[in-house]
Image 1 (cartoon, rainbow, N blue to C red):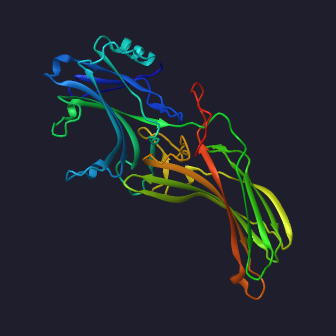
Image 2: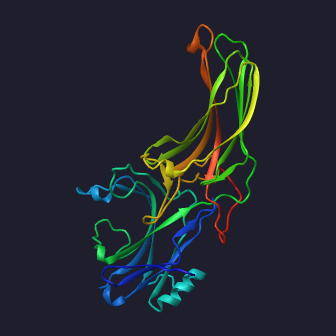
Image 3: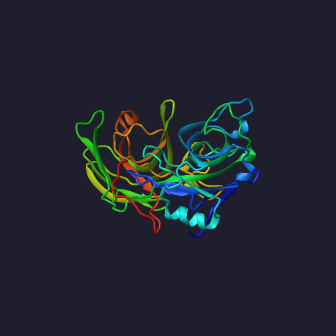
Length: 365
């Protein structure tokens, strides 16, 4: 264990220790969150020591909480009592054993097992003039002194608490399959034959920052001319709380001046690269959760355990590639007979598994 994360309460009677702050969601299971609390019994005054792990959706800054309103909704929360210990014979993980060697005899271990239907850590990018903490999904481990674990009438002073933010993250599966393919045929007014458009990606999964190769094939059986080809990537953010709302934002769009004449065929590959650095001004864009002010990137695609998993709350992120042919009208009617031909492809955008991390092989987006 190369680094230990520690936070001590204001009164100095408890201290929270974690061996890491990133916990991997393997789709069918999530890494156990385990740590240790160092307890000084002399300052408890008959109270107990509890720890909770909470997954919450923050939809307003804590600075706005001036009239007792909560701008944070708990999606999932679990409590454990660590002192006095209630299960002194529990098996300790290697992480806890390492932490206990550092903390000493006053260390009390704890662990949490998260369900698989919790969202990952995602923030909604604030606007250029927005202040305060960003909205989004976050995870918090908090140790505190209290008489009971969760009595709403009991006042817990800030000096009796210590907390650390953690992240729940997913990495790209190890096996990258061939990419999706889609096609469409469209007829126009005053024509009896269609424009056929086919688009495909060379692989299923792309890493953040890598160029995305889109192959476009066109069979133009009409008398019209394709003037341009637009290739774009859209981010779809599904916010599932009291209701389910989906927000779509274009994160990359490029136009290519390719002319496809009447009664001709065309095939070419194009490359585009969606980057957060090109979208810094877009308010409400989903980005991967961050700890403190570290750099991040566009939110990763959320991998679900099954296509029918409708129980997940919070923020669910997906992407799609759109290929659009801009077709001129031509003839006497001009623009009245012109139109666009568009096809869409699902895109999986993620981070690769770091060296030393385990991974998973099943992919359902």
